[in-house]
Length: 471
Image (cartoon, rainbow, N blue to C red; front, side, top):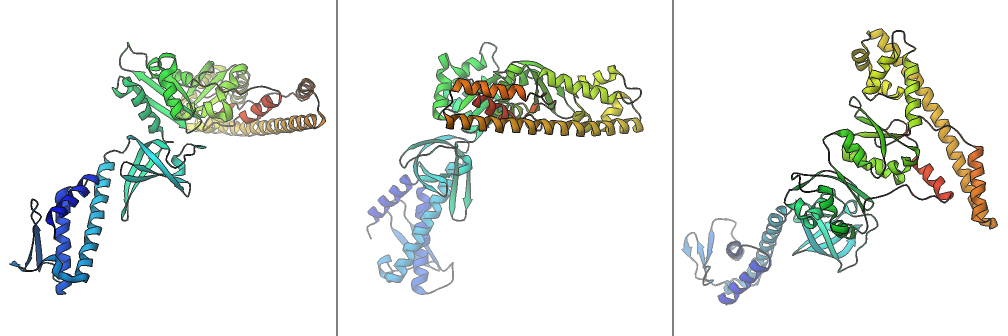
């Protein structure tokens, strides 16, 4: 046996696969013991021992402490096959443990790998010397990689499954964008600028709230960079995903106002009992505040931790009027008491129905019977308002179908676009109705207005999207 060649092979394996050399020598000793037990047909695990000199590679075999005057070549084919199988298995175990230890320390780190193939929708890529996979849920929707493409991603998780190490990658996770900002914005990496909150819909839009510990450093400006140079690199890496950077504020009202930009907010009313913020915007800002398919308000709600209702001034005032009239039906409840509830963020009969009797008893100083009567009135009125809003929604849906049918007929008949606009406007004018008081909301909103209906109507009439991202 050429011991020098054996040591060179062990050194090469240790270097290429990042395995400690002493572990490989121990594996060699165990494989030799297994081969000896196979040759002598013994089941006693302690009968044989083996030592390998780490410098010379000389191997010494002992049986119950006595040297065995045999060389590995004397064991025959069956024992040699046992030696080979044990060595391969133990080398694989060592490599698996090495990968597990190495990548477990790199969870949350951005790495660059090479795409290999897709398996059941999951992308398989090689990272250094290991194979990793990116589940469909962690991919950016619509993004595809060809074999050999460079893939920049986040190591999301490393776990041992059976005899394999599963390395889970992600490009859709929020932490992926945080790490990209640490790479592109030195102030974020140095913790001068802190990402306080974040909400993301991968592939579409992300909102970040940032603050600076140094008053001389503008958090938003530093993240955007000169002429948008820093944010552009991140947007390019994400294939055009829009990123809104908002200024963090400890005041929930200011933070909600910042998070809804580019829409201009008129008024914000917070209800701490319900965790709900009622935001009032002008009619011309409504589509901006809601965003395309409700995306802007939805992300703002997740960013701030508040359920957000978007209302126009008319809707807000109508809701207050209905609530005030309903409550004042109970003897002893005055306009001032209603104003006290409104100051606490309860601005509609839906809110009164949700907060419960305890709040009414404490804030309005009512006895239990009076509070029950108020709750009953609010429940009945809320049901009536909900039914009215449902009728108005159905009317709007009918109008939308008429518009689509009209647009289809005009296309088939070759009617000029200008004439189509006039006809659609005529339908709108002939079918006007009052907007619902429920408003349009984010997550957890009571009875939201459909932003999709407004968008489709705007599309037919030649209008654009109300969405306006920072980047």
